[in-house]
Length: 487
Image (cartoon, rainbow, N blue to C red; front, side):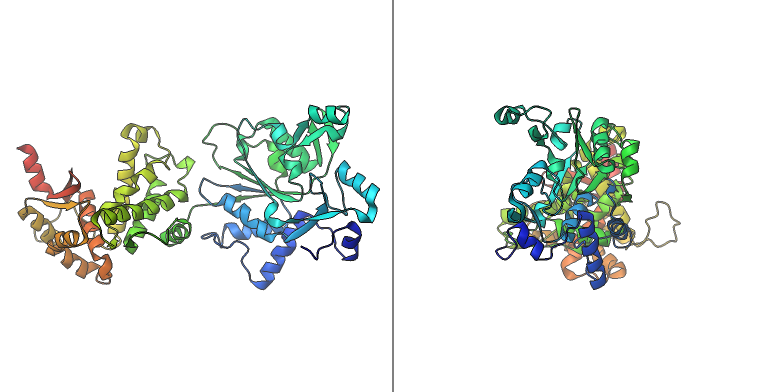
């Protein structure tokens, strides 16, 4: 910073050329594209869909509307556009609206240049300070975004209310030469959207009938939901017509992409008190729950299932295993299927339920989603379970079901130590045969999770019965459980 020009004269001698913010974004994006450098690091699943459209919108110097459900990285994309700005830009020192020294807008900057000429002091603004964000709510006012008459300033300066110097600028004028993000645009009152239209189209701001010509230099990015499930409003047609590009975002289309996002975003403390191994199947299950929720009859799909659900669920899964490990005085453990219940608080807080879901209750819906995910993943590895079959047909699950028929009950305890847990599952010998026949490539560390997973999946397919007991779960053969129920 010490070597940067400090006066207007020095700035002119340096050969500095003014650029609009959209020209900055365009020029730096072009440079990145030529070098093969990604402008949106950390965004996954958008390489062939959203990112190319966003780059074309930047090249077109458009204001942009990102249209998508919650948890689709809309605000993250806007944040990353800061990296396409020049590292520093000059502005007239003391200006409230970041006046370009070569193209001043405000009365303050114009007067400074008139008085000081080439000695006008110049300050420099870093790109990290050129990002403004506002969440639109129905109570946001014109004063918040655009500004208002300041009676105290008028009294102190002995100025008439008709003098533009009594205006106290809102967020948008103060964001001149910056990226300005308005989240949930439809929630803004129609009259405020019209004021935005005036800024986009006419380059003027209107405050209490006072019209001030001020062609602000802004990169607007709006976010909105494709279906307004909040029922609070919509985007007014004139404003929508002035937004150059509307880009649809989406959720990850496959589990591998979803797992990459979760691993990147989850808060995984390096200093966890216990070393926790997470089987790959457990990671798949966390993501599959999100996929199931997006098609569930109990969930309002219009509100969206945020990627944050999988992220917080994964964090809870690890914490459940860590909690058990600490209680047992052990230094390491492996995530168990029974630890999945620790994710329920993360799931219930992230799904909007329809009427049927509300009737059943959020915990019931969360358990149904976990069960549906288990069934889906089970059938990707193991044979289809037939409810009815011929007597001469061999069913790969018969030995396992026979084992449970002969045993009165089989319990797994939530707080079982690693050895106790392993001994209990290894006692069920048919599980080993199933794994060797259909999942022989399973890592030894993941085998216990897979064994427990098979039991829970067979419960979902109604081949086994599961009952909650004190601090654990009891599995029984379905037929014997039915007979005991009759007695």
